[in-house]
Amino acid sequence: MTRNYLIAGNWKMNLTATESAALAKEVVQLVSQNSSVDICVSPTFTALDAVSRMVNGSQVSLGAQNMHQEVSGAYTGEISASMLESLEVDYVILGHSERREYFGETDSLVNQKTVAALQAGLKPIVCVGETLEQREADQTIAVIQSQVEGGLASLGADCADSLVIAYEPVWAIGTGKTATPEMAEAVHAEIRAMLTGLMGESAAQKIRILYGGSMKPENADELLAQANIDGGLIGGAALKADSFISLIDSAAKQSN
Ligand code: 13P
Image 1 (cartoon, rainbow, N blue to C red):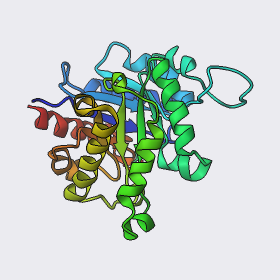
Image 2: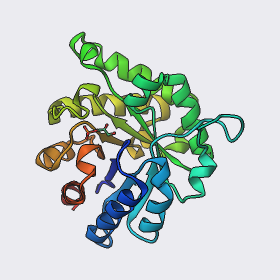
Image 3: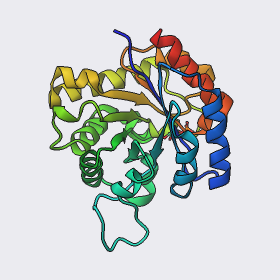
């Protein structure tokens, strides 16, 4: 079965709207037409409009890095799903470890956001991952299990076409330390089994599980070759068009 890889860039709090549009333009120009890989770039909120115009009609989809769980109301500084939709956003990253760590996001909040995103027709990329302390204490699977079960509570098999999971070991994010392909695959296989338990085999097979954490051109081939790694969520290497394109090429090679 050929796999439908997703390579998603998370630009985090980098680049102005002008700089983001320039990077998006480069990516669009370099991506081959009819790429077999799904591609997404996720700029900061203030650059969504400019990047949306740039990727419009191309192979590149637009992602946001967060959203609020309510439809509208008195939530100063927040952004709703319909606001994202009005800018042609397709994907929304939810529960990134940086949001969990610095902004106190809990599994229950991630669940509310995930439900809201799906209801609005967005594709949530729900992030899970253990810290170094948790890995060293042999708690990795227990931590991931509570994040998966908490973040996806009440969701049924009907969300399988839209839902994406990203496994991002916290100790590998922005550190240059990557999980070995075997370490990553072991956790991805566990996540697939958890999804099977929650939603059944056929839904679990459809849900894409991305790896994130210092994925770069030098390690992408091996990571993407693993049976349960369906793409990548990329930080640093997504900020340069050539390295991002190289990751897309790695995924395309695997799907051929
Ligand atoms: P890096 O690729 O910079 O390690 O970041 C990964 C990440 O957090 C993507 O969401």
